[in-house]
Image 1 (cartoon, one colour):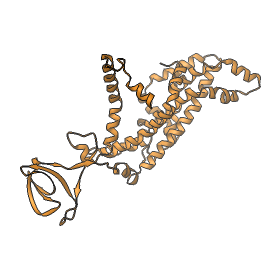
Image 2 (cartoon, helix red, strand yellow):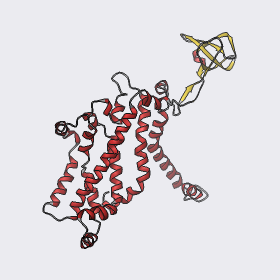
Image 3 (tube, helix red, strand yellow):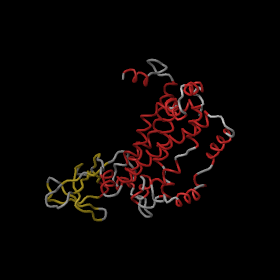
Image 4 (cartoon, helix red, strand yellow):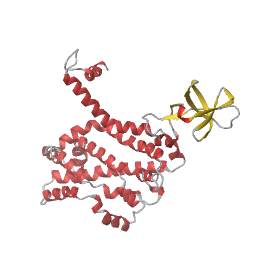
Length: 349
């Protein structure tokens, strides 16, 4: 901890400040604010009520109005801090008529004071609207959406790793006519956007009877040119002598692929796994086209249900967006050490 703190606070000027120290800290501080500021705002806003989200000027922290149970009134009354000629005090508002609020002292509710609304401010405290996270799971089918997304992400990632690694193994370790042409054709598909092939792809899925099925979301996305290219470039760095030695020991081609090549390709597989999880978890357009029944909605399609034509439930939308971020962040945290080595090994920049 001491070494980390010393590393973060060390300066070129030693005990004093050099001008480069000031520029460096300003530059790093701006970078941290730009990178984590939107995420911090998203997380804090997800705990706000609809009224807090609509207030202006906006606040970073979620606040809620304090209320008090006053004798003689059935419901808790909102508290306000009143500042006028009589000084500053906390009163509870009974009702408001135009620009005048009728207010009482919670300790002495018998006397009603008439206060200009310009002289009062809401008495608020930091409070979190946990209902933003609980209601979608209790009142809506969001748990089912989450399970569908987990199934699609896990299964699609496993199939992606298997199929892409097998294709990369064939294109990197076998010599056959047209191998380079196949590689070029696979890479060329990177230039074809999904929107161009949506109609023929949907026709195939419909003919196969996979509309409104999670397999209709999974299968068209498992063969990725990026994954094949990334794994092929990494497998080219594996010495062919290892494979020849295995063949001399009578190892089958499947054993060579499964027991030798795949373990040595672990860093590149980890990178592809991270990419696949991010792609499948955040995928919106293709599941929106294939899935039309709510019981098979994925998380991203389910989020779209909160955006109506006339009303957008921002408090639920922000809370569930935070939920959708958590798996991607966890995957990145646990596998990020493979990213640098994996990408460097494939030769990608």
